[in-house]
Image (cartoon, rainbow, N blue to C red; front, side):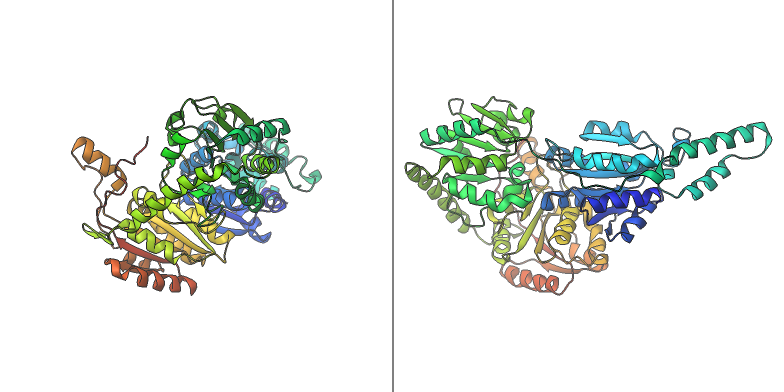
Length: 575
């Protein structure tokens, strides 16, 4: 086998079904070998989309997603997605091509110090220098990206390790140049170098499946947490993305959360865990609920800017924190009970230890339920129109009404997505994908590609702000080429609205925040998809239905919805 075939064998052994890429000579043997192994090659129009798509596969399936990109600019183009995965604690693998081993540092095409670039942003990085190291290094990458706190890893694979030995010897023979003692000496050195590169290839063991088991749950801490719960009168549970990383166990987690019997707020990837209308799930007034609670359980939720750096929970209120990361457990504030481990599994054990929920929690839950219902009623009274177009709340409520039971929502944007988070209800577990705490724009196309590949039967909705759409508009070409019928809706308010709202209020100037009401529906038509323009609120339901039918017929589609100015999220910017 050549090096590309070794890589393909390892990927197949790990259960990898898709390899995301943008073509390049440095990695061509990997792509060809993976295709022959039955791994589907999904090539995108930008390497960052390939990395985002690999991240999306990790989040939806639990199997680390893999992107292979060519050397130099191909590798550097992935860095935003890699950093996003690091902060979201997502097990992403990036394979980077590199200059030939003997040409490193000699001015070869696209040769840079890739390892120095990646090491600060990944859990683990390794450069391979011999063919026999390709398999073991890649196998270790699958372990490292999932062990402990999940995160991205980077493996650099020089081009001369990926082609066959005969071709590499021929290539290096051309490097030796003319005759004379210098030429003979160089030829001897290059022959020795190739001997070392390919030594031991014939004795490589077959690829093996790599696992990364979680540490055991501390039964003593489960008991202490259950006892604190029994003594509380106003407990509150916050569940974050980390709790649903064991994707194969989400149904059991949902049952456990429901069995605990205490009110819960779901964040990021945990959205949808309990379905759209569970009586224990709260969606609004979280800040007030945290202030009134007498016990807060943070399951995979660090006390960063999203919890006001620990100030969201009063100092007198005890916190039980469960997190895979020791650092995140104590970030900004020390909890009364700190548990290192998988939050989802801990919650399941806690539900078993607690047994029946105390009846005293019913009044507390009803208070929060009434607040939630009051907020929903207030939202429902908003006018369908806003100054200059459609009210974004109206559009999001219409989208919510159009979602099928098997829908999966990808969120990519600022202000419009913030509105959607209040009003669009994911229908089930693992049916909401957003970037996570990095606040990254541009994840949309990659995440949507992953969603449609992993769940081809699902109705995949891609919600864009008009700012974020600019990052991946060209990927509608990828949707079409790979036959991925994705339904996109862009909230087009001709503005970077989330920034403009605060900037104009504080500084009196909208510089840098103004966009055009561009014909995005026409742009996607030019890329082979269907485009629809939505200008009047009374047409919303009809146009969404037409777009849904186009997608059901196998065509990607985009609805260009012209939004008006809304103050719904005034004061929501958090840094």
